[in-house]
Image (cartoon, one colour):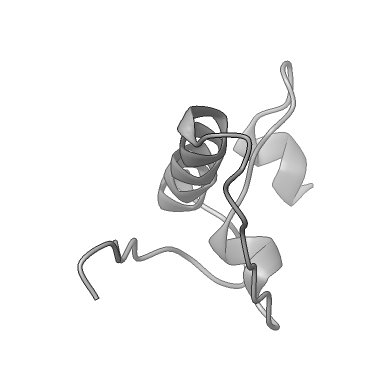
Length: 64
C-alpha cells in the first residue's frame, strides 16, 4: 500500500510522538475532500499512541 505512514509512539503514557501522530491525523482529515470516507480501527493502547491535546493542556498535565 503506497499511502501508509508508520509513526512510532508511546504506551501506556503518551509522549511527543503521540502528539505528532494526533497532529498528522487531524491534518489529513482537514485536507481531505468532504467526500472522503474514513475507516478508523482503534484498538487497545490507542489512548497512549495517538493524542490531540486541547489548547492549554500539556503532556505533563495529561499524565497527572
